Length: 221
Image (cartoon, rainbow, N blue to C red):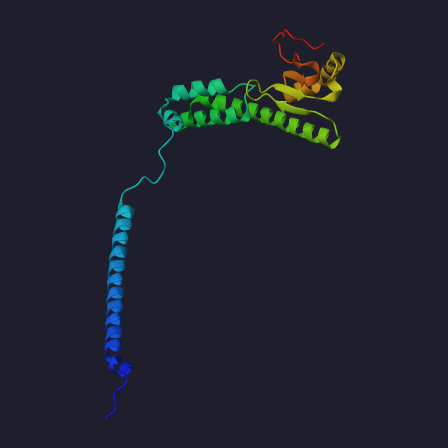
């Protein structure tokens, strides 16, 4: 009677071990699937709770906006008057317009608000005209290769034209000639002062064009 090979005698236990390992692996996969499902349900529950929580649909108003809303019609008129003058910038006229709209929303027949609104529109058109003039002046000078840059002093005086680093205005004589030659044009556009700046004369020189009745302490040379 022959002896069976040793390998055959251990085959059954090996198969049993493989089956046991496969069963353990399957159980682990099922367990992981259950845990994964539970975690997913927990995440969905948290997200749903956050979604259902009442939230503000818009950001909290700024202090400036809140202060504006609390102003009385009289306060709106006072602020509009402060902002509306011939040296104001287009941005200042826009803010003034909002104050006047707040007044007219309460009292559509407010004569003072209507008058200020008409004045603001007129002065704003003039400010925009000055701004357009400077833009075109810079474009023309650039196309001609003229060194220098023009700007408006919107921060302190919207009727002041600033001429910076123009080579042709190095000397005081040249500056005086320029002021006299361009005074009429600048006055018609709405400028009241011209400031000439340049590194070559170490600072700036301001000229009052004399377009208004106000006497100037710095007349053109």
